[in-house]
Image 1: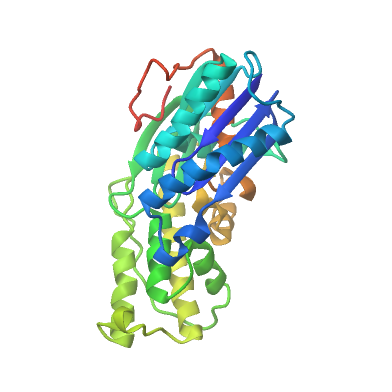
Image 2: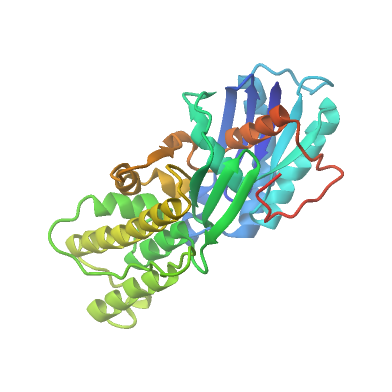
Amino acid sequence: MKILAFETTCDETSAAVLAGGVLRSNAVFSQISLHRKYSGVVPELASRAHLEKIPFVLRGALGRAGVKTPLKRGCFDAVAFSRGPGLPGALMVGRVAAEAAAELSGAPLIGVNHLEGHLLACEFEKGKAARPLQFPLAALLVSGGHTELWHARGYGDYKVLGRTRDDAAGEAFDKVAKLLGLDYPGGPAVEKDAARARGKGPAFPRPHMPGTRDFSFSGLKTAVSYYLAKRLGQDFYKKGLRLPPVERAQVCREFQAAVVETLVRKTAETARSLGLKRIAVGGGVSANGALRAAFAGLEGFEVRFSEKAYCSDNAAMVALCALRRLQAGKFRNSLRVSPELADPGW
């Protein structure tokens, strides 16, 4: 089966072609440079950038896959797109592009859940869907906009067990990086600075929230802010005051350690309570080296991460979701159906 897919949920514009389980192309345009001066994604700017770049991204993906244009009927078995969750304007760009491609090629249109894509991205190995997930498993989906725990019982059979009540883990990384005067995106910047840390740093709380499988990282971000205010003064951010590099690195290391410990502990506790031996971790934050090392140190679990090339948003994972639905004989033609964006199942 040959599938064309689009991904436009946030700040990456992507199109991919998957044929026979082999990734023929996966073109991605990142908007990081556009949003960097705002230290975060500006929805209106993101939507406009998607609209501007999607023709070029699509042309690149089709060209690399050897697909001739204009599209003709029968050239694809399905066209897929991320139907959510994501920024409404950005999602609309991807959907309209997918609808046009589906109409031209006469292929069914499949809207998939963006977070399911991050889970199934764990199946890619060197451009092939060569590592099928073994169910049941506990899935941690952790990114800039989402931090969720799922019980994955099979393809399309997912139950949300917990999610963040405020800031997602990636969002907390971005906000702490901004407080510290580091570049956007905050995750890689904090991880890089944390690797330089030497000596004892400040102690930050671990927001474990006993008795629930939910997450909360807003308080941890606030704890960093209070620490900086105590060290530099209440108006430190307005005045542009910053910690010395050595102390800043310590703050990065201790903040990162608090986030990692919370994610790993909550996921492991959830898996044990359900009698699960397998864990899959996906999403942009899953590229963090400290998080990967901590999960690797867990005893009694088989832990799967996606390759780093597929951690951030991309259309390859969307195409793979569509492939699994076609193989199962289950899909919704989104030209006729508008399913709930929050529903991760089929």
